[in-house]
Length: 110
Length: 119
Image 1 (tube, rainbow over the protein chains, first blue to last red):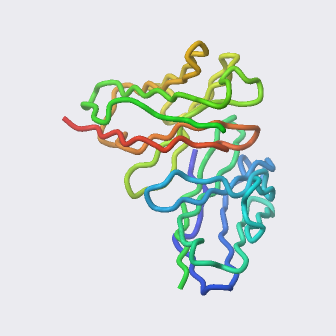
Image 2: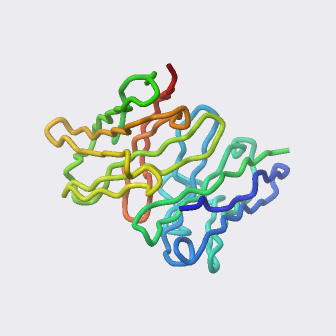
């Protein structure tokens, strides 16, 4: 199974909004509403930020929003803050009853 | 509060078997609501889903690792384990254990443990 495709890096100034894309196929993102997003700070375990395309776990800021169109999912961070600087990974359930992660995106707050 | 903790050797020789255990507290791995699994991350690289197991015994493995992989549960100890055989330097990574829910490869993570494959 091939990793989902994400941009290597995205940057923005504090207060701005940024969007990270995650492109797969009809066998993963396009076939299921089981897209998750993770935030990972250096040296730390990833943290679940979005599940089932657009749902936020308890405790996650509403500045994080997820969506999907066809084979591409997106994570938008509104009102960018310094603490949002991290790596972000998407993931999807697949038709093989497995999971696949994205290539990862480094978010830089300018 | 759910906690997961990985344990096992930090150094494994090439061609040998990598073995890790995840101890779970705050939830029962016999719960019908969740799967239990493993994810790894080579140094400086992205995440790779390894596989998972349901309390019923059903296992789900990454096709690229399937021939070398075994995941098992020990309900008496509330632990689950990973065995990866015939390891090479490419298997060097931080290994995370995780709880999976429907459609979510990890809703809770262990802190991760670095395993280096080297002679």
